[in-house]
Length: 138
Image (cartoon, rainbow, N blue to C red; front, side, top):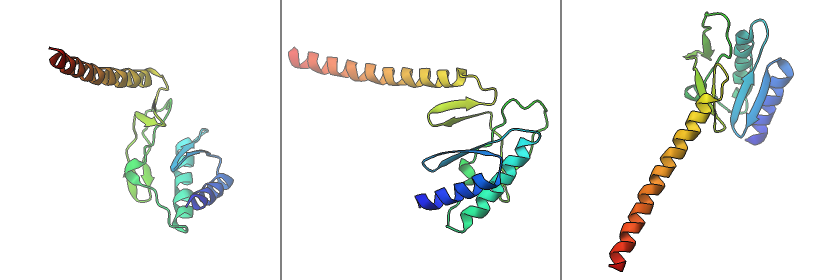
């Protein structure tokens, strides 16, 4: 299966100016230029065509298009085959929260909230252990 993914990615990389980044079974397509959205749409179409032969598929619910620094207010329509997908303002990829303005504030907030949640759980566990030990001692 890994070889099938690699063959599909090699085919796509050879036929498009879109940058590919892969990690495990995740794929990121990056494009810039006069009409990057059209280039991404073409790359996705090529990817879907190439993926059919080895029996691979793209999960529409996990497909998250995001536009960075889009100057125009025109929101392009992105489809995965015949299924439309909604543009997102932010997305978590490889444990990093990325948003359309490219600041790290959302990621820092995510890490802070995660840390606070873990600390609260540890406080509850520590208090339970202290209470249990105090019951044994007395």
